[in-house]
Amino acid sequence: MRLPVIPKVGIVSSSRSNPGWPPPRLRAQFMLGLRDAVPALIATGTWGLVSGIAIVKSGISEALATFMTLAVYAGSAQLTSLPLINDGVPLWLIFAAGFVVNMRFLIFGAALQPYFRHLSWPRRLGVGFFSTDIGFVLFMGRYGDSRRREDPRHLWYYLGVIGPGWFAWNICSIVGIYLAGVIPASWSLEFAAVLALLSVVIPLVSTKPVAICIVASAAVAWLGQGLPLRLGLLAAVIAGIVAGVASEFAVRRMERA
Image 1 (cartoon, one colour):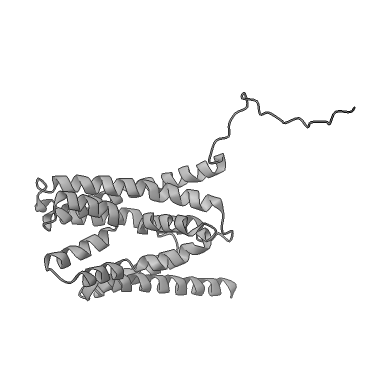
Image 2 (cartoon, helix red, strand yellow; image 1 turned 60 degrees about the vertical axis):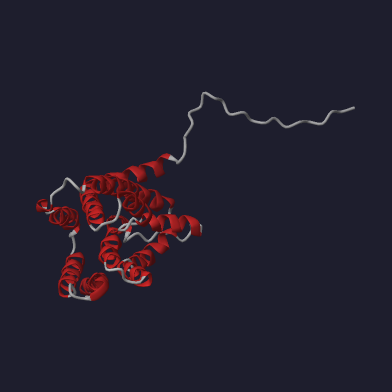
């Protein structure tokens, strides 16, 4: 009687090196994003420190302020809602103000969607929660002209950008929360935060469309300071995007002519 032939099952030798996860090319993208994010951490941390101090000085307890900064993770929305909370306005108006201020992330999300649409919606939701203005700017500056979409390298680069920002923001914000009583207002940390943000934005001005975008958004933001619910911020974002896109089309037409 002839016995059936049993196929041999290959056994991977333990001496082989384990490539690990994620693959090296994706780890390289993560480290690249981390390297690009490092200069922005000073601005992110300073802004988080200012937000933490402002929350406590508005009358909110330290425990509730800590929960707020971890759960909301949106400095502009937090600073917008604080005076409304102090004035005792209806809850729906507080949420409406936060929605208006953060409406710019709808624009950011629409721009990022082609790069992350292959992910499941829970993962896209998680990426959206940790997204920031600086993270969006750095990502689009690196991959905005990329024609290859749904590339895994995009996600790992973006994680390298937004991950350190989350830690820097929350650590500095919590430090500001618990040191708010000993930091005098004469230090003008709000101005320091603005200077730190400028140190990140100015090196990114490398083309005419980017310069026109910044000038347009800055002008509209200055003119819209008196608008309620910080609508001037939303108007500045829209104006900057429209000006940047229009100027880019104009530059391309001039190059083709």
